[in-house]
Structure formats: structure tokens, C-alpha cells
Image (cartoon, rainbow, N blue to C red; front, side, top):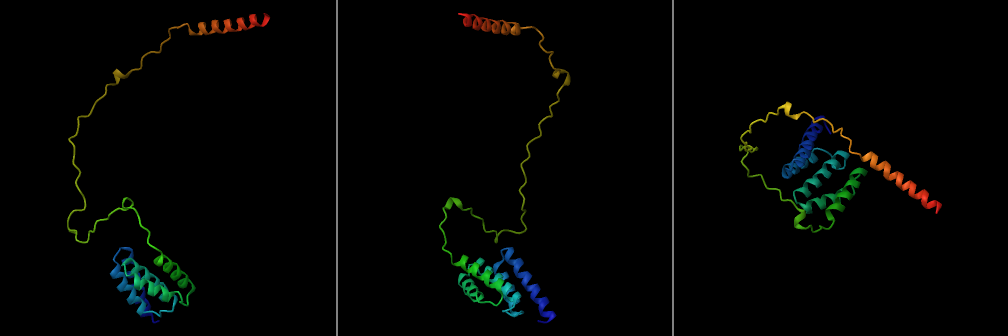
Length: 172
């Protein structure tokens, strides 16, 4: 591959990857197919680009094309490409499980949305309330209660009675 073809391949390959990651599947397919034409399909780079193309086909709901290409890649000369193709083929052919509707979140289609419209919604401002000023003189702590409530004396007398009764019962 010439240096010019290698540079064009890299540009198309990266553009295809980026388009796939942004959800622009048809653009991704175009770029990846163009990149594959610039490189030998049996090379490691050709295999990587074709794996990405399988993913783009699957994302674009072109399942038949994805399966056909993945089946071709199962016999690719590059070991890593073969292994990835086998994994992807296994996933594509896996049965689709039914999910309850309450597990799903609908994402609105924004392709028709006005691009010039504001993306932000202004918050409704509440009228500012008057600030509350606290007077620190009113918040002074009250003095502690030092009045004797006779609890300690009551507890001592009660403990003395219990010990005395146990001693008296022990002699009897």
C-alpha cells in the first residue's frame, strides 16, 4: 500500500468509526466501505475495518449483510479478526429476548427537531423573599440548673435498704 493510500485509508477508517459512535450509521458504512477498498481485505487493517463494518451493518439494522460479512471474516487470515468475527456472529445470531414494556425507555427522534431552537429551558424565578436577620442577644444560653433534686440521696438510701435486706435474709 502506498503512503497516499495508507493516509486515505486512515482518514476513511477513522471517519467511519466516529460516525458509528455518533449514531450516523449510513455515513459510517460509506466511510468504512471506502476504507476497505483502499487496503487489502486479507490484511490486519482490512480485517479491523471489516469488523467495524459488521458492527455498522448491525446498527443500521442490515442484519443479513452483517451476518454475511461476519461469516466471511470467520476464515480471515488474521487470528484476532477471526475471533472477533466469531464473537460478533454469535451475538447477531442469538435469539432476541422479549422485554417487558416497563423496562424500556423511549428516546424521542430528534432528527426533525429545529437545530436553531434553544436547547435550554429558562427556569421560573420565584420572587426573592426578604432576608431574615437574627438578633444574637436573644440567643444567649440559659444558665444551668444547679438546684439539688435529692436523687443521689434517694438512690443511696435505696441501695442501702437492698443490701441490708439481703444481709438480714442471709442470716435467717
